Image: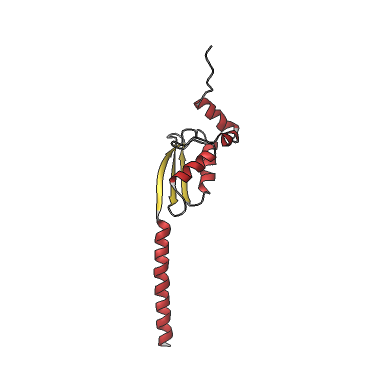
Amino acid sequence: MKVFSLLFVVFLATTSVGYAQYAQQQKVSGKAVIKTPTVQCDVCKDRVEFFIGREPGVTSVKVNIKQKTTTVTWLNDRTTLENIKVAIANQGFDADDIEAEESAVKRLPKECKLHRNNLNPPVTPKQ
């Protein structure tokens, strides 16, 4: 019986150490504030938070409309900052130095398209 108890204690100690190492690896994450100037309204904010929050490795997303920024945290072993910026651009919004995909901009709701047009009015040639 003592041998069984001793083996059980050793088993518990080994698994708890392995779990602690696993938990530490999962906690390695990055955090960044991304400039998102084309996120102008609550609809835009909700879209970014919803879709980017579901990207693999992203642990949190918070959009600040007034400051035109998006704060993102992620797990380093699952994704990178560049992948997150590309995902934002694929949703139709500019992210730092990455411009939005034109096809994604066309899929935006009317409200968001109007905001984008107000930011970047079409250039008319001078006559």
